[in-house]
Structure formats: C-alpha cells, structure tokens
Amino acid sequence: MEKCVVLAEQTPHRIWRYLPATLLLAADQLSKWEALRSLRVYDAVPLLPGFNLTLVFNPGAAFSFLSDASGWQRWFFSALAVVVIMLLGRWIWREHAEKRLSLLAYSLILAGAAGNLIDRLLHGHVVDFIDLYYRSWHWPAFNLADTWITLGAFTLLLAFWREEHT
Image (cartoon, rainbow, N blue to C red; front, side, top):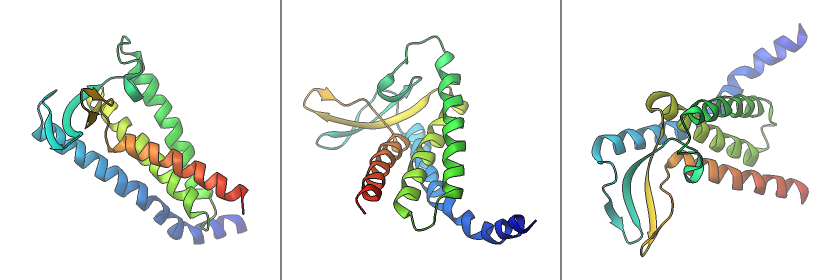
C-alpha cells in the first residue's frame, strides 16, 4: 500500500515527462498535414539550394526498405512501433529525473515512432516530404518523425557515452 501512495504522489510530476514527446509529435503531424494540403505528389518545391519539399509516400521503413512488399510490412512496422512506444513510455516513466539526456532521447524516438505509426494507420504509408540533394543525387525523402528518431538515437548514444565517462 505504501508503494501505491508514493507512486500516486509522484504521478503529476512524471506526467510532465511526456510533454517533449507530445510537442514533437504535434510538430510532425502538423508538418505532414501541411505537406498533404499544399504539395502535389512528386512535385519538387525548391526552398534552398540542396533542399526541396517533395511529397512522397513510403509504405516501407527507412530508406524505403520493404516498400515494394505486398502490404504485410504496414502491419509489421505498426506492431513494431507499438512495442517501441510502450517500452519508451515505460522508460520515460521510470528513468531518474536527473538523466535528462536519456529522457530527451527517449522522447525523440517515441515521438518519431508515434508519428510514423499514425501515418501507417491513417494512410497505409508514411508521409515524407523533406528532399535533400546535391546536384542530381537525392537523399531518400524523409519527415520530422524520421528526424526525431535519428536525433534520438544519436542523443541516446551520447547519453550512454557520458554515463560511461562520468
């Protein structure tokens, strides 16, 4: 019973730990909504040298991995995202508050996984629109959720490295 009382007292403070992930998820979904509203598929809109907005749909994973599969990949990557989101949600809840870098990394990855999961469930594919290129070479199109996942992975590596060296 005593453990339940302590957890209940800590709950309001721990709920705030999900605010960064919530804000990042909102930014991802708003950017995709705007891309769907204002861009036409495959039409490049130049913003800066080396940077276009180009709407594409990716039924696969990163770098269009398994994009030409028969459709099972939608449910596989959706299930994988649900597992990742549940694990990260638990880690955010349980992590020590002073481990801010780890909490940030978990939030970034959680927001990215949730953003792409929402796309898969709503549209059957992930909405990508950031097109970086050099001359005729184009990096595979991506979105903010992909950016959050990548930044989260690097931040997590940095957090682990800092823990090892302190």
